[in-house]
Image 1: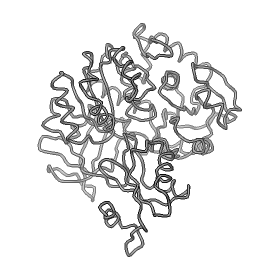
Image 2: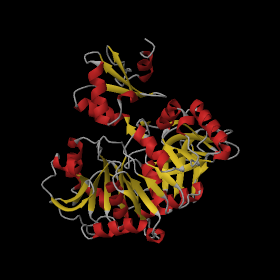
Image 3: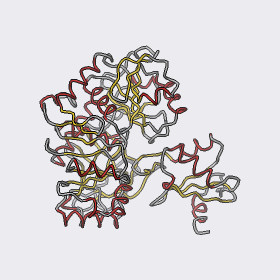
Length: 473
């Protein structure tokens, strides 16, 4: 069975809730997906500009049900980057907010349908031939930077992962969650998949956790499950966990990076006091999002662990020679196996016809160990990929984008922020503004450090050890 193919059985259950639409039942949701089916032929490539409102969520569900190939782009992605993606992929349709489309370069297309604050627009591009029949979804690898690199996911990838998470978290049709992250972020999309597939409810909220309107909807709709990346939990603690607590809340889930022990202990203690189940999880977009889970029962005694692999999957550690490490507490690369592993990457229209290059095996790029009980622990990264507020970015890509804009920087990962080193020819305020715009992330995610010149090794490469000395200068 494919993802979302049987959701009509939930009939009068509430699927979506928002201030704009009120409650939408599963019967109404299915009718809307059927209406969209009349406008877009099967296997069409569709660009979906996403924000946390009802229309893009309906269009996403429709795309999965109706067998389109959907490429998701966060609304924060700047216009120039969207134009680059358009030229690389030639989509036949763009689904976007009316205001966004009006102010874009794509407003000369044919509007074929209105959905609340969104429109479905047919472009001048012809339907692409020979797209891999298994390809269903293209998810970005680097937040809202507009990188041409996307992860190729099949319906089977999504369905398998969704079923595993539903089983792991015991999600039922009576459960209700609320949106806290962008749809184009694989963790949020995984939450959407599991709740819709279970016949549960999603409160669609376009406010951040800093807005009182978010908490009004949270309390009014009696949310049973709340999810977030480490930054969200950091903010929840600052807001006061007791203040946001409601009796209906039964589950908290966390993914998108390691939650530091101090914060984790506070969350765990709060959950113990309130009888809430707290699940810390690990995942990558390349594996349809979530890959392992630390059960709430083990959270306190295994606080640094990412837990064990989700159902229907396997994990192991390999050394530099590719040999499996069988003894505990030895560092090697974490390898993941499962039918939820993506088909590979996509960089342009030609890659849409590619077959599955991963064959169910994902080399995560994470250095890890396991203990005597089979719990896994992340120890670091093999390459320069980081997560900022749950969004994954390539440090090389950020540096290159900044260089294109006229500012040379060097990025270095830190426990709390991304360190941005720049030569003193530039103003700190300008560097901060530019990197925030390019990445689409809040300025508080960065710490800019002015230096006279970049230290280099004898071979001419950046000396990252000496670079770190400037932190204490």
